[in-house]
Amino acid sequence: MLQSTSRHQQQQTMVSLVKSCTHKPHLLQIQAHLTRSSLLQNPKFSLLFLSSLCSSRDLRYARLFFSQIKNPSSSQYNTLIRAYSSSNSPKEAFFLYREMRQKGLKPDPKSFSFVIKSCVKFRSVFCGLQVHGRIIRDGFLSDCLLLTTLMEFYSSFASREDACKVFDEMSQKDTVAWNVLISCYLRNGRTRDVLMLFDNMKNEGVCEPDGVTCLLVTQACANLGALEFGEQVHRYIKERGYGAARNLSNSLISMYSRCGCLDKAYDVFKGIGEKNVISWSAMISGLAMNGFGRDAILAFEEMRKTGVIPDEQTFTGLLSACSHCGLVDEGMEFLNQMSKEFGIMPNVHHYGCVVDLLGRAGLLEQAYRVIISMKVKPDATIWRTLLGACRIHGHFTLGERVIEHLIELKAQEAGDYVLLLNIYSSTGSWEKVSELRKFLKDKGIQTTPGCSSIELKGIVHEFIVDDVSHPQKHEIYNKLDEINKQLKIAGYVAETTSELHDLGAEEKANALSYHSEKLALAFGVLVTRPGTTLRVTKNLRICIDCHNFAKFLSGVYNRQLIIRDRTRFHHFRDGHCSCNDYW
Image (cartoon, rainbow, N blue to C red):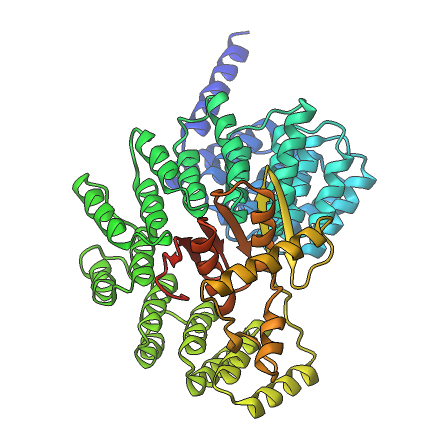
């Protein structure tokens, strides 16, 4: 009896030692003791020791120890699979899962969950599909946690349809499952559907949206410029007591800023008890995108006084502020300051802001030299920024060079060639226009149709060029014709260089009349009270003619107009734009 008690106490002591040990020399000593005392083959001790090895992150040692276990159990396999799934060798998790099945051990939901996560990490759709098939065959479709992991797998590969299918098969949908689905829609650019899912989630009343849900939906509202819906989400956040969450407040600052409501963004900012660098950076970026470059710089100075150290995002906002307001000297100074004073090496986004800044100022060759001399590899976006500047300043020889760089990156898109077409047409180089059009046709390159959306009363309305799908199409076109007449009286003249076909002046003006953003604005004027701010989001870059149209409309109809296109934010008031010009 005494001997049995003593053995039990020794085992308990060993358990405590294993649990508390993390250093490899101590683990080696414990392993030697386990081997001498024949406890190594005891499933309880071997599992516990294997867990300790995995926690120490020495997976080579853990794998070696695992190989000494004669008949590993499912729990032991799961322990090692889990460790590899979050390591730098996630593929090993899949190999262990396959070995586990070959030995006749049946994977459980934990096994499947870990191996699916590993498939996401080493980016293998094929392996993940195999695991999904086995989950179906083994009858685990009632495990909601496992199905949520499957949804995350499909979401990470932008397979919205498959993620939805898994979601629909779930017998009980919890908040996490809803959040994964919403995240999937957001990642796939189905932003309007995110708002619908949020409403459905609230209306069903089974799962209450949590802070993560609100964070995702706030991001969707920011992307869409859906202010009214964003305000609903903000009220919901307050009602549920999520307002103290700093990440939500930071997201609300970005959302209100991107909707052109700086006063509301500032109210949220003021309400944050302890502002971190993300809070300050969000406010600085908000001021920048709304054309308040000097105020953004003042906010940066105030931030430094409070002792908050700037990060990469802070300088992105600052350089963007300089770009929006044409502060060339200040921008170049900030670029130098970030590395010399704060030890932050400029990344491609910082250089992109500088190229944009120089491009706005017409310093195209200097912008080109900046890209060539960058310490990081230029991406397609920065070349497109320069290409846009070439289009504005009619510099087609440099534009052709930029296209060559995009071809080298294998990153050229139809929109890049459209910009080059713009450059040729604006300079009257119709022969080059014809050659480029033939090239696009021969290569089968198709352009992305322009699409503009406007949110009114929580509903997002979308328009394309010459759109006839809207139920109020007749009233919209009549209103647009009326607006055009009023703007012409005020001095608006169609910018025919925006039309890429070799037509007469009148034909060009007619071709430009029904661009998607003009239809969205006409709809907004039609259905809202005078003085209501209109917010439009476009998937492509706004053309010069539509920019001028919006500028005149804001003055003639006394409207604030906020148009966010692919490249920047345009805020129109009283016949002026926050960007000062087309940029």
